[in-house]
Image (tube, rainbow, N blue to C red; front, top):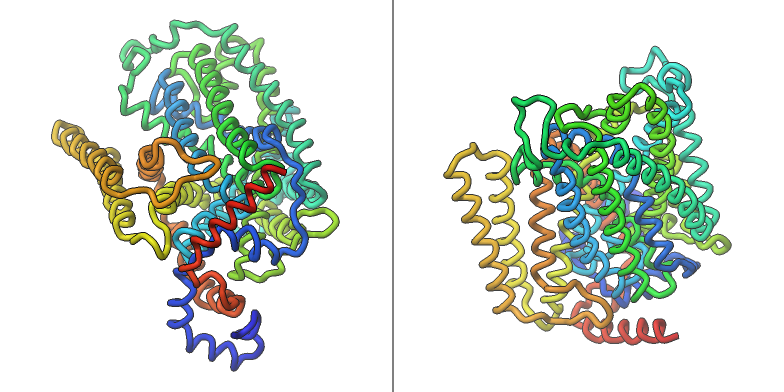
Amino acid sequence: MDRHGSSFSSFRSYIHALSDLPHRLLRRAGCVSTSFEETGQIRSRSGADFKKNLRWYDLICFGIGGMVGAGVFVTSGTASHDKAGPAVILSYAVAGLCALLSAFCYTEFAVHMPVAGGAFSYIRVTFGEFTAFLVGANLVMDYVLSNAAAARSFTTYFGTAIGVSAESKWRITVSFLPKGFNQIDIIAVLIILILTLIICYSTRESSVLNMILTAVHIMFILFVITMGFWKGDPKNFTEPSDPNRPGGFFPFGAPGVFNGAALVYVSYIGFDAVSTLAEEVKNPVTDIPFGVSGSVVLVTILYCLMAASMSMLLPYDMIKPESPFTCAFMEKSDKFNWVSNVIGVGASFGILTSLLVAMLGQARYICVIGRSGVVPTWFAKIHAKTSTPVNTSVFLGIFTAMIALFTELNVLLSLVSIGTLFVFLMVSNAVIYRRYVLVGTTSPWPTLSFLLSFSFTCIMFTLLWWLGPPGKPKGYMIGACSIIAVVLVQLFNHMVPQARKPDFWGVPLMPWIPCVSIFLNIFLLGNIDASSYVRFGFFSFVVVLVYVLYSVHSSFDNEEEGSVCQKSVEMVKESFDIEVLTLKVQS
């Protein structure tokens, strides 16, 4: 068997590898690993191990820090003014429910397979190497671009906090560079590099810093909420300032609530990074469910209170979409102009926490992708002294800083794609597939047929909702899609038995909860703009090229006898894996 690196030892070897491409794709692209391999043989490729020094409260703080950034100070205004009105409170509740259902799916995998790879590992053990690499690479690119955007946002919000214009005072204009890339932001670069040093030094210390920053940020949020309820007026929940605008708590009806939910759901993205810390948790069986789900629930409560506070301050038709809270306080009285400075400080702390958590997550994604052999194994190495993935953290930190240095915020935001929502969708599908399919024992086709049929029905519902002309025919077709979806789930539930039951923690009401998560993620994907799909298609094409020209050959070289393609032994390995995890929990 060829060893790792043989395909690239010489030009002739590489040409030979390309000529063998069909065979290698057939062998590797659809190969799945097992939980035993992910937590044993594959994990050992990192050399040193992560230190297990995180508890449930660390995960809750990481989850809150990762989700509650500056976005809530912006998206809430657009959702209220244009989509849902005062019912934006329910929009946040619906979006929070969607995030919680996705969190359940993540948690089942993370408890059973506590590794740092998050969604990449979950998809690899179900749908194979190529799908995992395609999804994981897009997700990491999303992380890098959104982190660069967040770093540049920090400069703006911090300037607001101290009354300085970041554009004129802190950013350097380079005339010979093209527009959109000619504003040099040194502060954004320094923030990224400082956080990179922190996450390289220790995950434990990163957790302590995150707790401190999150606590300060929550204090500012609670201040804004308290001020809103104190100075607000309950009549603003039902009475717009313009009598000609729709009134009541639901001025845009039930569709407005869901349209608003699709918009504000981006404020919940961040909890997935917590799953990448599973390998560093002391007791995965109890700490991960509390940490992941608890953070989503607490963030949902905070968001709903912020939305209620904003709705009490002003009628929905007077809320400024671009800066709802600042303008709301200024509309009440000129004496509250200072509140914009307070919001700037709070948003700055929120950006720092979300950056810290996202940078921790992206480094661990690449670390585990490196373990799989589809990227150089140099990325998989864990430093013996710090027990952190120093190589990936430094590489991604420098890469993110280079992008943040030149690229303006509007350019970055137009590039941030559907990657995270797509990963949520894939993980929800994967948890159903894994429950109902046991390789070598049960046929995958009934489950695959159901997943494809259900997803197609959800896509039709989504297209009708977002693109269909209003009227009774649209309502009838949406109703028909809903009935078909429910019937499909009910038939699948009664006709296809589960192949395995989770020994420690599992998604309740299987398969209903993952199916609702699939539907909600597809529905929210329908509200993504066309440029994001173009970006996703472009990067996916690049990822496929990388896989064909490098990754499949590296993975093929890395393969050992008795490894991931011998699927028939999965049952034995899964049983052994459960025994090992049981011993760890008991100890």
